[in-house]
Length: 175
Image: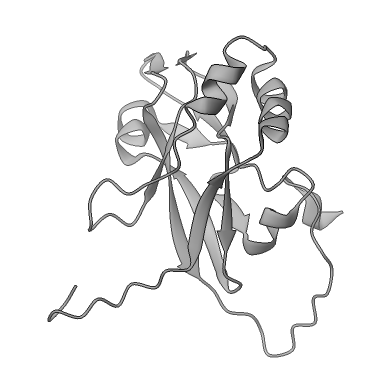
């Protein structure tokens, strides 16, 4: 807020995916049914830590241990409905990146507004890697914020004529 004027645009809403989609996503990410139903009940929608935070924190659904060089695909149980002309960009939490060189497999995750309508309900997955060069093992406890998402407005070219409709996640628009 500057000079008492709130100029923040409210352009998105986080939701849980359905239980059916959660189970499919959990099995795909973690390859185990252990804790699946309890984890669905404990899905925490992303939120900002402070009124000045740009990023919405994403929370781990289970305890994770990553040795240097190891990666894991994290199911979040979360989807987001975003107004057209906006994108959600996913990054590692700053502290984890600084201490462990926590990286996203795709460097920056891009959640487009039309991903919400995919067959997988727009279930957001975040693949992380412990890229530590100091031999540090990373422990993320269930319920801990490990990634953050920032909404960004974008434009298109004056001669843009894209008409294709998305159906899928990673790499689906390049097929």
